[in-house]
Amino acid sequence: MTSKNCAGDLTLKGAKLVKWALAGCVLTAVTLVAAAKAPVASRAAASTIESAAKTFTFVIPHYATTTKDQMDKTTDDYRGHQADMINDLKEQLKNRALPDHAKAEVMRLFGSLQATGEIDYLIENINFQEPDGAGLFRSQWRTLYPARQSLEELGPYATRAILDVIGNRRRGVPFDNSEIDGFVEILASIEHPRYAVEMLTDARDAPTNKLARANYEAVLARCTQKWPYGTRFLTSELPPVSSLHRHSKLPE
Image (cartoon, rainbow, N blue to C red; front, side, top):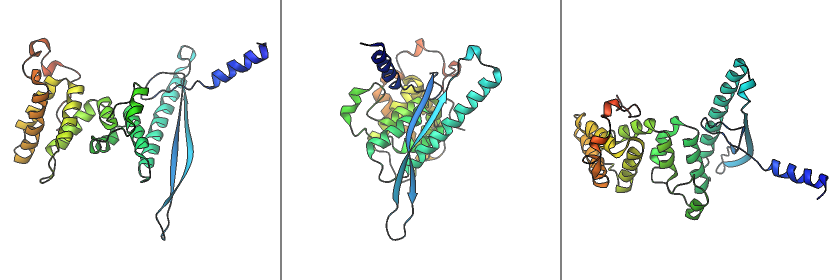
């Protein structure tokens, strides 16, 4: 192989390398290409959607040789790009023609981008399943329930929101079993089963509203059924709830 061909080959390989930095992951560069949707209103027919690619690029400098002012600007730029990416994804979800596999990817990105403002949307879609089940085996970052995956990544923010949703469900709109399963799986994953049981017990005992108590009781019953050791085993091995820093406080 000639030196010219070798250089061309290396250039081609280098061009294929795209690194991401989402939610604070420190990599050399971030490039997220998202389809920005621009609705065109029409009185005679349904709105049409014109799409154009939107690119967000963020470069992390070599901090050992970077000034404090440059570091501050880098952080501000990243925060700005993060907010822009979240807003762009939110706009895309308004497109009713967006296919399910695209919705699944948007839900996953909400978790990676720490989009705490989209927790309500993720909870509403807690039972949404990845339409391409075979695709799950091609990536370690994909699970069957993308909204649940992102809620777990959002941690205590999701815990507080889920407890609030359980206690404020309207009368006549009961939880189905799969929805309850989603709640307990996320709470147990974020907080550990023992603490999930304790938090649900505290929440159940706090309100005077009978409907709220019944809702918490239903989720608590499923949690203790699925993880019976949450109230029996491991109790002596774990610190008290009040001393666990990562434990989420109940909503006010």
